[in-house]
Length: 349
Image (cartoon, rainbow, N blue to C red; front, side, top):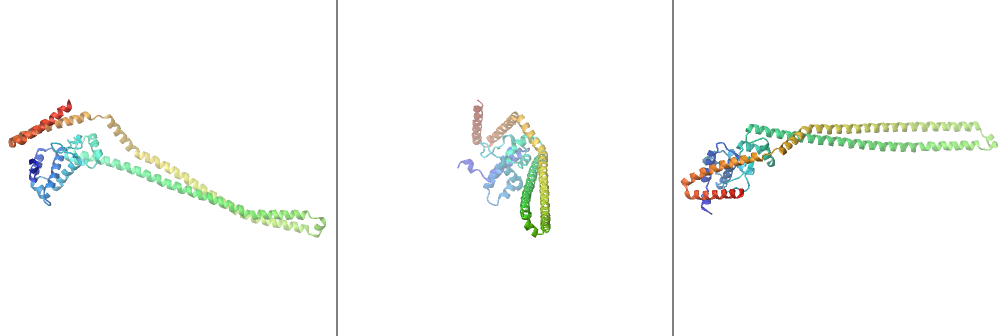
């Protein structure tokens, strides 16, 4: 364990936090990450149950404020820090205000940087950014509701359509069975008619001597009466069966009409869903095209260049102060700084 690691105590870390807070009158995300990193470090160093006392004694933060800075470090800080401390995962967000950076946490991680760049989150107020985030969430919610409504409407209409098809199938089966029963019911009467016709034919073909012994007129009357009675009974039953068939046909017609109405409703629902989702889809396409046509590389370079200049000037100021109090440490820091600058120059060449 080297000398610098031995000196890391809660008091030292607290002094660093106070120094950073004083320097960052207009705090940007980088400072927030750096303060959050040290707060996380301090929480590991202080004894159990002493966290609130440490915050009150060594910092200017309440527990909720400290938690927000620690969340900034956990959400925005890079997994590996640099020689000079924490770094942001998002190079284009370093100049965000703390309040705007916290508000961006309401968005999914993969959307934050693009949303901040699109709406110039660095230069708008926290209230304006909050409004834009709410509008985005509301648009997404409405689009989701429209899609869910469309899916429910389609599912409901499909259920009605399937039910109508099933009822039509049942009606067709019932009609077929009714026709079969009508044919079975008519069969005995047709057979009886054929028997009577055969009897009448046999009587008419008998020899004259036999016919003399028989009351021919009475036989014919009996045959005619029997046939008339049989015809009447068969006609009555067949008419009843026809009435049943007509009722089945009307039911099938009604089911077919319901089927057509269900199809029309499903089509209308699909058209309404498409109209409801249209504005949001058009807005999404517009934003995608706007993003594809824009070139933010020059703006990003300018931001990084200004940040590098500002950081370099602050490094020189800090180095001068360290020289006054600890010349040995200042020499080490100056050597490290020259090494980094040499690396920068080498990469440019």
